Length: 116
Image 1 (cartoon, rainbow, N blue to C red):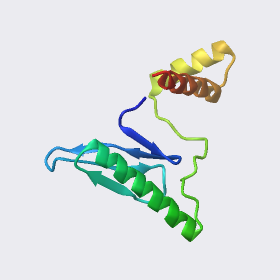
Image 2 (image 1 turned 135 degrees about the vertical axis):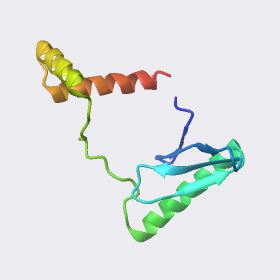
Image 3 (image 1 turned 60 degrees about the vertical axis):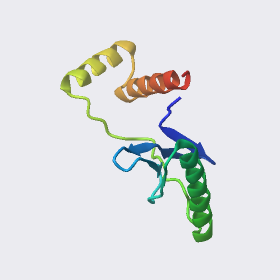
């Protein structure tokens, strides 16, 4: 479980801190717009986050737009030549393509995160 993430109604938000101002703040993640919130303590930040999500979803509905930025299911990664070579050799040895090997590694990483 990631303690720097808030969730509400399918939306995800960050938790950041500003030590100079003594504030917690965050923004909604994975959306096409910028929606921020801030508060002086965690309980208030959670409340501000929920209010921001509710307002954002209401605004999206009123404008007839999809609230979440869609994930395409593909992305580019830069892993360096040596790791790329090792991956290609390991994948070939396992009878996998590079995409299959990367997908397997990502799935293992994500499943490992869900255990905690």
